Length: 185
Length: 123
Image 1 (cartoon, one colour):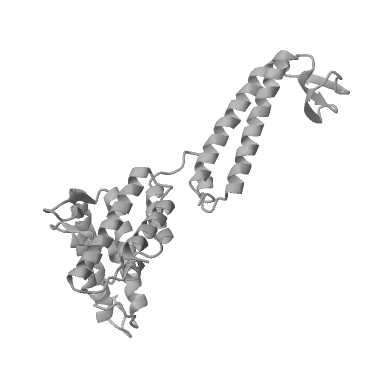
Image 2 (cartoon, rainbow over the protein chains, first blue to last red; image 1 turned 60 degrees about the horizontal axis):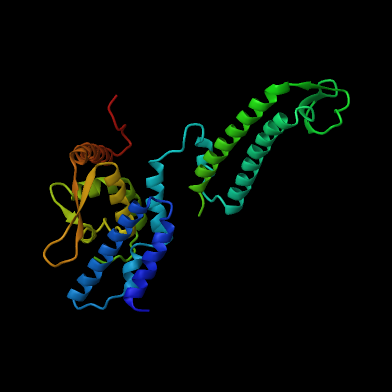
């Protein structure tokens, strides 16, 4: 592998690991590292030395480790929103599986609450929040058959409350996913 | 200066970690240098064997903290190079850290100069 290819591969890999930074920040890092490496190559050539790209790159360490040093201090300067500090500790090493699970659960709940609110508008007699089992249980139903031994609570208030809860769950899900995104590899 | 390991390597490494910010700020005091030039200068000193992978992220952090400024500069037909220099905030920070360093050296010298069994300080 010639030195240009080795340099290109290293910088490509570094660019990949800097993906969590803003594009301009990552581009500046790449430009700076490339400039240093080319300086080092020129210095060796000027001294009549053999250019060993592996030796030069070894000074930077692996692309992943180098990128993580930049990412760590850059992202430390941008703390998560208020109330999300606990998430900061678990964002490192967040897997795609966790992210998609969180997205599915959050958006599903937001959608379900919105549907309940809209359904109450369209089918007021079939949809409702019922207090059953002498107040021991609260259920949301969508049926012609009245829940046995139950009493409807909220009534029409279910519409705005369900829509409001849907909106809040939607916003919360977006914020959590955004915070978790920073921890994804 | 070779990078061969020596029996003091662990001590040197720990000392470098604690003083690296001071080292870089002091190196940039009243001078403008580019990365490789700074690295080569430091590597001339026996206890300053830092690597590129340590220097560049540190320079980036110091720049984000406003302690140093960086500017791309091209001389003639040469490739552009990124030159670093202290900002006024960096000069202030350097003065502060230099004072603390001198105090630490004086404190350590005092401890070394006052071995037991007598108490270190007279009652």
